[in-house]
Each structure stands twice: as structure tokens, then as C-alpha cells.
Image 1 (tube, rainbow, N blue to C red):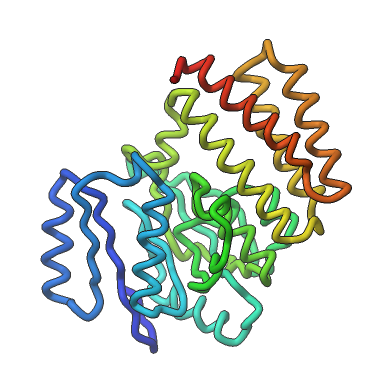
Image 2 (cartoon, rainbow, N blue to C red):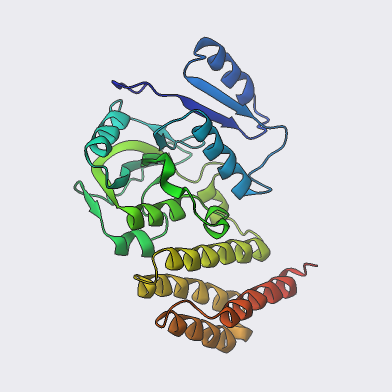
Length: 294
């Protein structure tokens, strides 16, 4: 339980679970109606549209008028009872800080602690780290301002992941502060968690759609920052080019040439729409060819 000198609510989203979680949530909501605010789904949204799921949670936070949002997903948990207090205290006295994070424990399905130290000391995160290192700030450790993504274009909001766009936007609007303490626990590769899914062989069409959504998001972020960090966004996009070459080695030269042109264009402003259309057409064609989609 978190110990704070400010009121808070817990927006608990049950995505049509089948293990009895909804009944447990209802019981807690009845006991603590001022704190527990449940959202129940009749069908699983995550498997259909992650963008819709993220928007629903954001809309709920706005409806309740919260100032800050802290994320705790699935089987993750906070092990420091003062975690929220420490982070909110810092952000209240540093208005240009748009996100705080912390180091975390890693716990496997077997209960083994496989933690490593990512953040040895408390410090500000550099924009280089925020832009080039996807998911660098552990989701379970974050607290961010509710208006962080306010006014962002659809290309950012519809990215298949939520933590990476938030991380970049926080660094562009202000800065991210990391506490060098393990104040939360990340349950690694549990069941159908994101990490477990990554370790499995998921179909290539899903991979391509995910990468495409990140490419679009990075282009949008580059526009939002008016090209000031174009070299960092271009470097990050090069990772997806390498992924594509592994999936489609027979298209390697074309992929390399296409992305090289796209990167070069960024140094003179936005990538020409021609390159964007070619890139998207290539990804779509490869997706249909490899996964035999129609």
C-alpha cells in the first residue's frame, strides 16, 4: 500500500479476463469506492487495438481530473511504500520534469530474481537515451504528467506501444528524472505478458505492423521537435531496417537503399512524402507476401 500525503485513485482496467479477476476487482471497489475505479470490458481490447486500450485509460484519467499518472500493469507491483510520494514530491518542485522513473527488480515466473542495475544513481535522463533506447524507462516505475501526450497526432497515439512515445515526449517537453532505487518489481516473461510474447515466435505480419507503427511515431516525433534531433531519430530507424533485412534477405539491397534515402532526407527537413509512401508500400507489400495476407 502506498503512503502519501495526497489523495489518489486506482483506475483498474479488466480486459475481459477469464480467471476471476473481475470479481476480485468488484469486491475491492465495493470496499474502497473512493479509491478503486474499475473499467470492465466485454471483449479483449489488447488483442484487437492497443491504441484503443491506451486511449480509454487516458480518457478515464482525464475524466477523474488527475494531475499525474503512474502505471502498474499485469503482475507487476510496487515494493516501496513511498514510491509515489517520492516521485510526486520531485515533480511538484520541478515543473519542467515531465516524467520520473526508477530502477526495478526483475522476477521470473519461477520466483527467481534476475535483476540487473540499469540506473546506479539518481539522475536526469539525456535526450539521446530517451530517443534511441526504446523502453529504457521501466513502465512499472514511471509517473508522468497527465497532459504529456496532449495534442499529439494520431501517429504518436496509435503506436503499438505506449511507453516509448511517452518516454520521447517527456524528454522533448522537458526532462525525465530517474531514481536510482529499486522501488518496483517487474514480473519478467509471465504468461501472455509483453516480454513473454516477444520471446515466442509471433507471426511476421504482426511484427511488421508493430515496426511500421513505430516508424510512423518516430517520423511524427521528428516533426514535433522540428528536426532538432533528426540524427537520433534516423539512427533509431536504422534498427528497423536491420530487422527487415533479417526477415526479407532477398530484399536487403532495396531496403538498405530506401532507408538510406529516407535518412538523408531528414538532414534537409522532413522526409519527402515520396519516400514515406515508398517505405509504407514496401512494408505493406512484404507483409502481404510473407504472411499471405489480403
